[in-house]
Length: 504
Image (cartoon, rainbow, N blue to C red; front, top):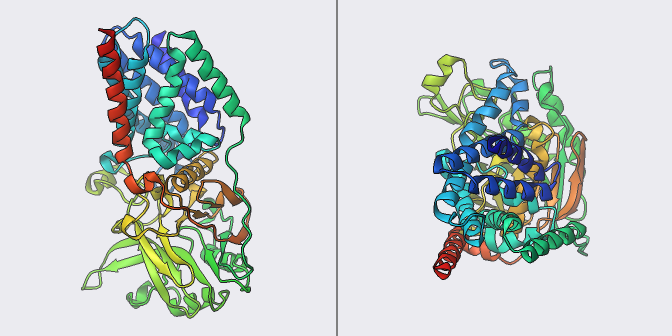
């Protein structure tokens, strides 16, 4: 029975994430998990129950990964289900450790008390952060992201994501405390929170000549990649959706990896299917004299002998005179997606990376800021990079906004809204607007509070053009970063110690 309850808690805990957004269910599920852990007779039992919770939690939350295998010739789609469960078996180690720490260091009385709750929250912060950094990290869906649709999202400006997750565990576990008045107060507060809409984007009056951003979503699904003329049709559609110049300078942004011809000069001639100069001129033909385009494509890296040694998943800044004014190479690559770890061992077993091609992408140097004429400093985070709290901004060169091109066509129906929610939490943490362009949705302009200024829903070919949102002053989290998570762990641990000493 305890094992089944742990599985039930894990399954339901993931329902607070997008697209469902049932965050009260997540809170109840976390409370159930902590109750089951507290009742474990041994440390081994607490670890086992917490691991089962994690397996169920991550299997449901990451179900969208299976969809990426539907586009593979080399690996069967059924392998996607194995990948989802296999990943969950590993990720479950982190809540297992959190539960074990809570049981070992926090459990002293017959029922959960405030000290146990504080230790559990501190342990969750530590293990969730570890999940984001160990083996290059997998930071998808931290618990704190359930607050994105609510006013509590703004707490992240101080705490950041991982400490916010710990506060979420603390709040949920408060339902277990022995004092009826405390439980009733928490329930009433949560009920009132459900009635309050989340912070909305505030209309801002700007001059007609103020810089604008145009986000392009061509709606070319992943399954069409191998259809005849796909690359040319995709390019033409994005050019069509880029609109025409107006009085205001425009920043035209395209999704990740949607220019499937090489934009840079200097590669060996055999690699080109068309002239890079003519390609840049074709894109620049829709730009006004003060416009700039940010387009996603591939950069190639060659050795001195002309041999291809790697590729970059890149964003190119293109000016009206066909110049490439800057390039950013994705730094935080997806293992198994953009490169195959231990290729010499895994490739003979029939495994390959999910992104087509045999050459692995090479990582760039990390968060970078490009200076764009007329638009100032822009930070770059390609796709998956945006999920890593505290790692999205070059703090020595703080940008005015972030550009987050992505290809969410891989992600099924659950992945895109989850990805968008995490981008909104980054905007809130850093106090920076974020521009998201994806091939099939959800594309969006997010203001510096994390509110949605404009979106293009999934499955629609369209473009949105709005004034470029202004940044906020650096938040406390933007200044301190994930040291806030460590501070939260210290404070929660100190609270637990103080309670235990007072009880003596």
